Length: 122
Image (cartoon, rainbow, N blue to C red; front, side, top):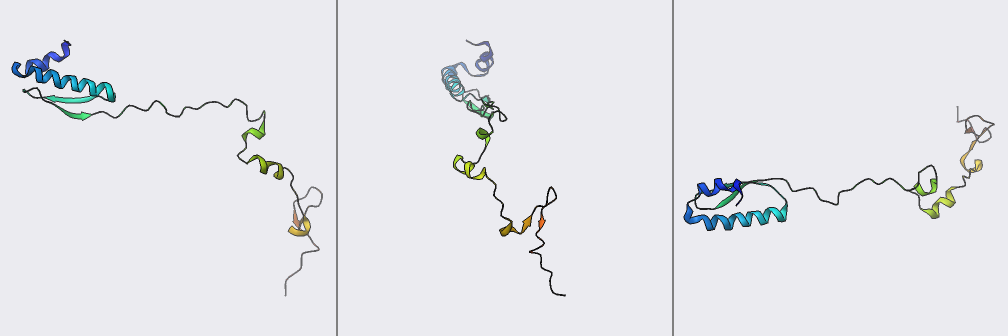
């Protein structure tokens, strides 16, 4: 017998020891099945009452970060959230000054085309 259980047997009337053993076995099976700790109260008749129960243990399948196999700078196409069929279309940037009215003069900032700029009424 486990020496830690002696205090329970000292407290319980010997007539009810079989009932105490049965309840201790049930408690041990519950502990092995759930993995949770419990604070219990034993009365003199061998009844065991759970007073407090610990939090459940964390699940074994928690997310763990795994480093990517390819570095982002080694192959940029692998690290994009854009679908592959859209990446080919978005590779070319088309700018039509006729539609936008914005033109670039040399390396300056883009501004409105002077030919399209019409002053408002006075």
